[in-house]
Image (cartoon, rainbow, N blue to C red; front, side, top):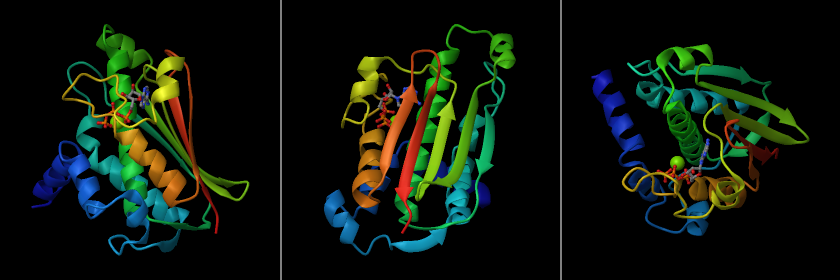
Length: 208
Ligand SMILES: Nc1ncnc2c1ncn2[C@@H]1O[C@H](COP(=O)(O)OP(=O)(O)OP(=O)(O)O)[C@@H](O)[C@H]1O
Ligand SMILES: [Mg+2]
């Protein structure tokens, strides 16, 4: 039973991810979505935010496991102190999902041409940090994947921009995430990256 629920969530979170997003929006624009009853604005704390990240990792668990080409992806968590923040949990979880899925894709791409032993020496690692700084709740999601060049860096928040083969990426994950963070939460979404050095996405949401 639980297995089936996880499978269903996995299916929804991957293949049907965008449909789920749009169903979540109730088939309306993001602006209306802000005022819709579909998701409730809730006052909660970093603890709940961290739980949202953990459930995202659980849903993506099948992609983190070891396989014949590489050891399991390591997850380093550094969750900070409690602090009150206003946010839409469902929407933020969608952002975590997009960022972690992108990190896994970038590490898999970076693994191409490497042996199992080479990857084992410098394991694929996602580091997630949450903390409060400058009246902002900050969530940093870092990978040691392929990283990106300036050209990709300049376009990655644009709708339909993707470097993935057709059928794999739609190029909507980051543009939706960007809107959720900036328009819906009044926050910022930035990236620190360079070719071959991995990427770190930085979410900042103002405290109430
Ligand atoms: N962690 C990352 N490391 C390297 N490149 C990245 C990373 N995250 C995103 N990118 C680049 O940004 C592009 C856009 O990402 P985005 O999530 O919007 O779309 P996508 O992953 O290609 O498709 P999908 O809509 O399925 O998410 C990616 O195709 C990739 O080139
Ligand atoms: Mg994506």
